[in-house]
Length: 218
Length: 218
Image 1: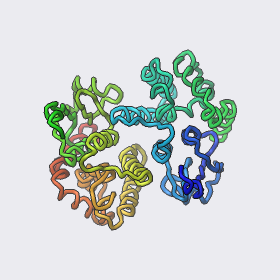
Image 2 (image 1 turned 60 degrees about the vertical axis):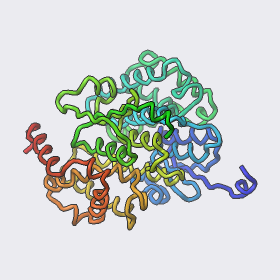
Image 3 (image 1 turned 180 degrees about the vertical axis):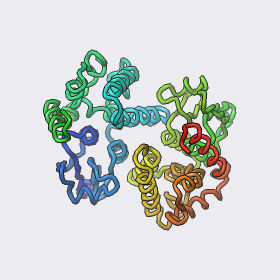
Image 4 (image 1 turned 135 degrees about the vertical axis):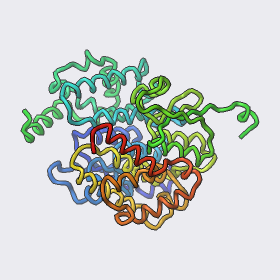
């Protein structure tokens, strides 16, 4: 970084909501790159004017505002962060086929959370099947990308805050169903970039209970 | 291309199905890059062994097989093509923010077709609203990326084969609702890469009628 760059302070604001696994992706990505930012917690019941202005299409967090310019949709934001601070660690491989594979599996992870409706038992089965598929992809590697944390790891990372909630609601043990994923979570949590960015499982569970109560699902 | 590269013939196979707008994206991308490939039509009623082997996760076309290695999910495939044949025209801009914008809008287009279920009138309204939003983004430019065809154009291109079907089923005129999009379609169709890659609107309509009949929607 040149003297001039240092002088021109970058303005970086993250609109986020603490239990959001999409938000966690962005928090981890920024922490891994060592990028400082101002965190603004959104109110779940009333969206802020800045959120509506910066993400008029989806009106959803997370939104990263870099020198006044917004980026939305967490996978896109992480890719943006990776490209802007490319002199430090990189999340996506350079080789086109390896890069394709990382994008493919990040998209697969994205779809894990998109499934809505249908029988609860079917969703639970699909969810566990997906975790097992991800275990196969992880294989004996430390991280999905190999020895270093990468794009797919960051896409999946928020899950560690939600495992406890899923287990309680779905009545299963992730440790039994997908032990390699649990080992991967523990490995990720040893990184300060991760442990400081993700929400506490119990706090997330209490939040989920409140939401259920609010919608009359008990 | 060096003498050695020419000697090492690349094997390129596209598994596709003619009315697929996802397939059309890949066809246009390959045509724009001047990449030759073997086109293999998939049977809609019985998936081929090669499709099941090459895309075990989703079992869907399009799949581009490059020297034996499969790439799946059309947006990812187009990005792969863009990176591998990067010495020719490029679809994604180099600037990280412009690239982010292209990926954001390609994803927006992707979501246009993902909406399923719900009231037909609501879906029609959302679809037309989305086209109008895309008109705003296009503005007075020739293509979404500017003067050259780019990533968002390729993501949206398959729509031109389906407009007629949507209009007949939804009873509306795209020309009236989104005239700039129609002008953009006509501009795209002047390119051989597009006109030779997309399906005939009337043929698509007849195909859609057959599908409706098959599922008892008449």
